[in-house]
Image (cartoon, rainbow, N blue to C red; front, top):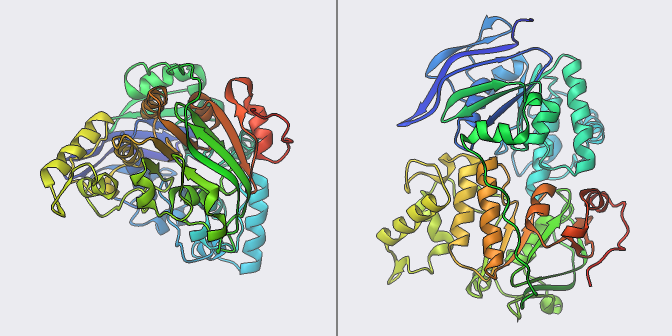
Length: 506
């Protein structure tokens, strides 16, 4: 066998009392696609940061192409030939896509712009090179990160959830490209919670649990159930079936809504209509960047409608077109945004204070002052119910892994007992065990009579959760499709604009 391209021995890293990595051994072979599996908080992100030079190990050694390697920065890693796409992105929001790329990739603007467009076409990762990053959705930002890495011609490419922004038709196209990269001499570290994808694309899989390596297998020799059990140390629960429902009152209704945002790079919405009733889950599918962020802002109250369109959005039967986010919450609305750092939580604040951002009406304030005991108890209850793994309620939100922060935000909003819950990307970056728990909880709430709207780029998730699915494409919304009567391929055709609006729910 060829010598490893990358070899780790005895790698350990601690943050105070938290041992993120403990004695990690890992070999990545040349021309291979190697998966890293593990629950949220298992140590995957820390290990990748050590490989990329963002952090330095407390103990252990790293060898690159047989020689000892001591990386002090990502710039050194890139010079060696290591590229990485982070779970939380490293882009400057006030710069354009091409300006962000120029910070890493040498070349003239015109030449780089054409390379970005070509790579976007080849990978199914189209993005406007001249758009400002602050105007991009989370999925579009991930595309920029992937393209920027590919433009550095890496020998080792680290990809974290690279397919979360793609419809089914483009996932295999990306996989074909990754296989071509592998066959051309590039090794890939592939982090994904989609176990069937790992079985389809990866040659090896290293499994982490509690910061330690607990397995190293050929994923093609195991089914997804086996991989999940090795990952979480137990059998994952079966999906919870939906209970039959007769359809309750309309908790959210949008009627023929069109909207042209002030931002020239944002997506305009055209004739949007949808309804969510008590005891239903409606899912919005679509490739990122087709108007999801703009629609979410109009529903959440972050963007208000002009006065001549105020009767186009109703919650609990009330016209909310000119009501702000706080007023909508007082009606019984709760919201989990797709961007957990910055919109869902304040990174520098402890979890207790992040609880107060939306849960303060639950008697967490007394005479205008924070009731610290009640706020702490609420936070501890959220952490316990939703298995949020952190050092305690005073841990800064930014110190949590992406999946644990997502569990905290979802739990915080559910604990408000809303009548209408809107969740954008509910399990983005969340491991298979936690994702299953979140989905089961949403189904339980639906069965108890809550109205739930879900925006997700995970088709499997939408088919597991939803009674009806609508597809957003270029700012227009398909008719509602009855989930049990619809196949993923049909949703995929709507997602790329190839399906006519012929199948609707009456």
